[in-house]
Length: 391
Ligand SMILES: Nc1ncnc2c1ncn2[C@@H]1O[C@H](COP(=O)(O)OP(=O)(O)O)[C@@H](O)[C@H]1O
Ligand SMILES: [Mg+2]
Image 1 (cartoon, helix red, strand yellow):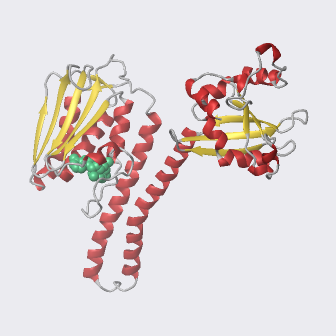
Image 2 (cartoon, helix red, strand yellow; image 1 turned 180 degrees about the horizontal axis):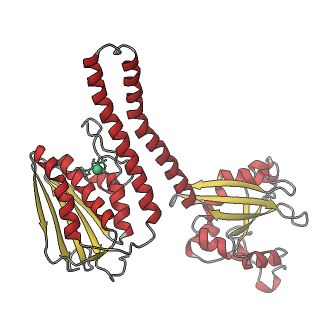
Image 3 (cartoon, rainbow, N blue to C red; image 1 turned 90 degrees about the horizontal axis):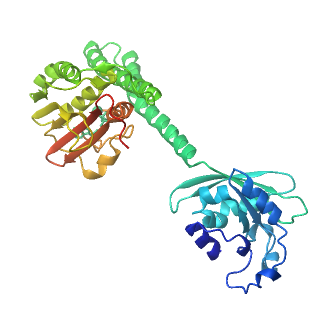
């Protein structure tokens, strides 16, 4: 098998050599017996889907004494599509217990399908369907392979998403149900307690509504993410409008909000309402974390610095506690929160996921910089109309 592994790794095919043991003396070419599998191999080679020809016949007398499920399977051929798609993992696939198990279960005409999960060199999920060849080819199986890595990752994301969303909704809902029970029961004749509980219920219900709004928002944005928005908007006007809405909140929290919007910002192509949502979510986070100051700015980007293409850069900076480096790559995941849960903050962890998707829809870029103890800087680059998407 060492030979096959090396061959796959280097992209070289060792067709006629595989069934032999490494190091076996090869007869001179003219004495090589005609290969009975040659027509079969040639046929598999022509087919577009990844196919393998496996041999589960006992290769040695020692192996013949083992039960069929314990016998090693050997590879007689991997067609071009299989080598191209799975060349780096075919050797590992052959040793995988799920494949060996499926091979042992193949009987008669039946097709046996199995999922093979591999973790090295990278995580891959393969679907393998195995079928025995007719009796003229004893012990031979043909295996059709397909890559399910992406589907498996999507399915896991969907499951995680539903689990997270239900969990987030269940917490305030449980609290609401608890208070309703109390209002009907022990607090039925206690107007001061009723007023207190109703105030808490109002907060919890508002939290549920915010969460549902965010979820709806996120799914709407995701649905339209592959369509480039057609409208045009003035970023300065959008940012100034959102900043204005934050004024009262900022004042009650005794935080300074400095707004620095360049006069000469070009009109941008995109959805102004969605871009307002970016500014809103970033300011919302800054307001939650800032100690004394937030700076909102927007400037034309010449393309000489990040991200090396002309456009406009909008930044939101705060002097809050900052974010530890290990959280940074995960901040835009849905429901991800960097706080340890003891801070009493009630965010949903969806705000930056929404920002990321809107930025993506506008073919823009998001950069998050932060150092613990010094604050955080969120920069969004949006391209000018006509600039092609960065890769
Ligand atoms: N300006 C900031 N300063 C410190 N931490 C931040 C800041 N912005 C975001 N974070 C961290 O990133 C996490 C994700 O943010 P976000 O997606 O907006 O969710 P939410 O605000 O609902 O918690 C937050 O929970 C917080 O831990
Ligand atoms: Mg937020």
